[in-house]
Each structure stands twice: as structure tokens, then as C-alpha cells.
Length: 447
Length: 105
Image (cartoon, rainbow over all chains, first blue to last red; front, side):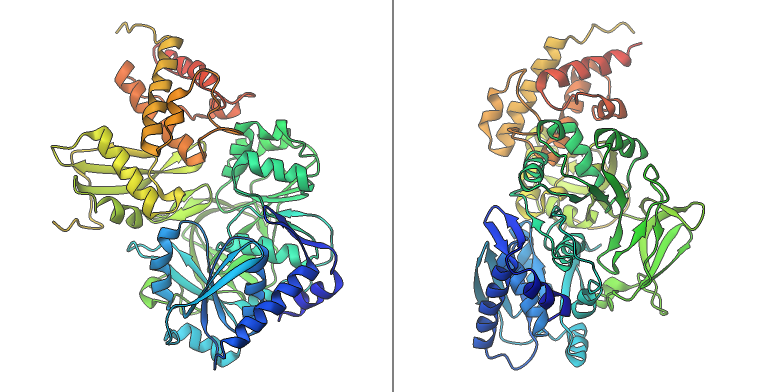
């Protein structure tokens, strides 16, 4: 088990580790849950490290399982969000066990008996390290899978100083940013506050109820908080720090936020699933430029693209075809983020190069949406792209060639409902345009 | 070309009709009961952020059909208003009337 986690469980016993819709959970509760998980793990009588899928959100049982699996050197794939996406993800990783958590409880089910044959897991096994499996959107419509060294990742939280500033968990349990929030909160011995959902109203109510001091959020969430007016109807005076990342911050929005929250410090963060979260600082509070101040990370800009090389970097993708061109032979990761250099070693994130669409900080590839739409009988062809949107940064637009018999209004609703069933909410096209033809080739409809 | 004015009443009717259709699509028939005071976004609103963006996009198509002009409802002006036009149906109608009028100056 990572040394700091063990230390915090001992030192912080009666202090609150997590608060959420399932109730309060102290560090002592987490320790008890972890002990119970150990018993379940021992009962499996595994003869070596295995791959576990962990279905859940930020909640006590899921956290206890995550740390117990890390301690025992297993690999864990946190799965959250739309259930329809899970079978595809499970298939990609070859998970042997599935844990489904709900608040303080869980169920454990076997999925397959053979250990995963992927080389990345074998390498971790040799080192005696635990693995963290993360997913991102792939160009072919299937998810791209990467394996982090969880033992190394957790060790980077070792030197965090104790504080008592409650932190709100806004990004998901399966997101590198959401895991960073969780590890950061527990490593400092503070409390992770989990809202019942991520709407502006519920989050604002949770901030007021639990006196949240630190809010890690995306610019889109902060924009929607202002648009909803919930920052005026709830007492958010406990907030001291708002960190923002996962998508570019429009300067106009930062200025409105500074007016709405005059006493709050705004800090920009940066990270990728491939490299982990990188420590940064801002030259001043009104600036959207950042400076990397992380000793474990090197960076450079090549043809306007940010390249990173870090200690907490994934070895590559499970399917090596996914990694083609993303990692250089000397270990640099090409982030796909277009950046602009500023004065004194600063830089600013401008957006994404290539096809990735970033909806409020959650990313997707056009192909995964196209593959769902092309399955509908009245759709002849389709292209999905991103479009600038003042509410959520980028919105998903589908240009669709429909059969002559199609009623456009009905087909538009059918397309969106098919996407709602099969995909996470941010991937559903908000605009469906009917066009005579689409340009270029990506997926071909098989007729 | 001299186009007839797009009235506030017409804008409210357009929004309510679209909300009803969107309610059918989402399986939320309550959206057909909306009125000028209905909250679009925030506490007690039936829409999440993606729902709000979808509604705006459909409304832009409806406005084009009704008036022959394309407008962007979620523009910088809408975002910087002290009271967001996305909070209630009536506020959104005011904003849309302004947007359409601005295309005819």
C-alpha cells in the first residue's frame, strides 16, 4: 500500500475522508472497508496479479477497492458513466473480475478465468507494481486503452502537506483529473465532497452544505454555474480556490468569474491520461497562461504542439496500433494540444489539433459517434465534427445524408436517442444537420 | 428587404412548441406544460447542459424557418449578461427578439 495512504488512515481516523449522498465516511471507516476488501481478495486465492474492472463513482467502497487492489499489485480499470459503453471497454482489457460498488457496499463477479495476455500487464507483474487502466476515445470508434503504473502514480502524492480544506469531486472516478482530486484530497488528510450529480444546482448546494474550499472544475462547468445563477442562490463563501483545466479558458469567462468570486484564487491545472497531472503555476490571477513547475515532467513545443515527457507516463496503449505516432522513440508524448508560447517560460492552451472534440473538458472522437449513427436504417452517410459553442466550449455536430423517405424531424430525434442509449451524454450530437453529401471518408456504411 | 417584426409572443410560442417536441424526444411530457416562467437551466430545470445546448441548436433552426435568418443564441453577449437569458423561457424570448432584430438593422 502506498505509504502515505496507510499513514493517513492511521493519523486521521475520526476525521471525515468522504461525504456524499451515501452519508459520511471517516478515515477509520475507509480502513475498515479496506480490511473487508482484503478478506474478499484473499478468498479468491489468486496465484498472481489480475485485472479488475471497478464499476462505480467516487464512493467509499470504490475507493477502498482501488487502494486494496493497488496494495496487492493488481491492475484496476475504473468504469463510470454510461453503462452501454462498459461491455466494449471490458472486452478491450480482458478483465478477470468485476467489482460493482454502491456507497459502502459492493458485489464481486468473475468475468473470465484467463489472465489478460497484454504485455503492459506482464511488465507491471515483473516489477511487482499495480496498474491503472484508463480509457480515451479512439479514432476507429473503439476505446483506446492505456495502462499507468499505479504504484508510481500514487507515490507522487507522498509529500503532500496536511490541510483541512474540503475538496469537491467534479470529474469522474474513471477520469485522470477525478482520480487526481481523490488522491490529492486523501493525501492531504482532508475531505472529498461528492455531489449527487454534476449539475450546477446540486454542486452549488453541496459546496454550501459541506463548506467546500477547493473546487476543481472545467471552464464549461464554471460557465454553466454563472449561467444558472446558482452561485447567487447558495452561499459559496467557503470557496478559497477554484482550479480549472481539461479545456481552454476563454479570457472573458475568467474575467466574469473573478468578478463573481472576488475572494477566490483561480489556478489553472494541466494533465493528460497519458502523462498524469502536471503541477503548474499562473503568472497572475487574470492570466490564462501557465508555467509548468513539475520536476517530474519535461515539456517542449514542436510545430505549435505541446510535447511532454513525465515520470508518471503510460508505457503506451494496450493495442499498439493506437500508439502509432503518439509516442516518440525517446519517450516524448505528443499531446495533440495546440499551444502558444508566452513570456518567461509560460504557455497557453489554444485547443486541440486534429479531430478530437472537447465538450466541456470531456473528449471524444468523431468515429465513435458516426459508428452509432450509421447503424440507423434511414441514414446513408454521416460526418461528425466539433463546433465552437459559448456554453460548453465545443458542441458535437452531425452532418447526415438521409434517405429520401426520411422525415427529418423524426430522424433527428431517432439519431439523438440512439446516441443517448449507446454513448456517454457529452457524445450525443446537439446539432443534426441534413446535407446532400459529406466530404472525405472515415467510416463507410455497409449496405 | 422589409421583413415583418418578429414579436415577443411569436418567440415565446416558438420556444414552447420546441420544448414540447423536445419533451417527446426525451420522454419528458412535462416539458409540454412549460410557460414563460419555466426555468430552462439551473435548479428545478429538466435540462442538463447538453440538453440546453441541443434545445438552442433546434431553436436556431426554428428561427431560420420562421424568419429566414440564422442567429447564434449562445453568443458572447448572452454569456456576459448579468441575468442569463437561459434561466427562463421569457428571458430567452427577449434575447431571441433582440438577436433577430439585430439582423435586420
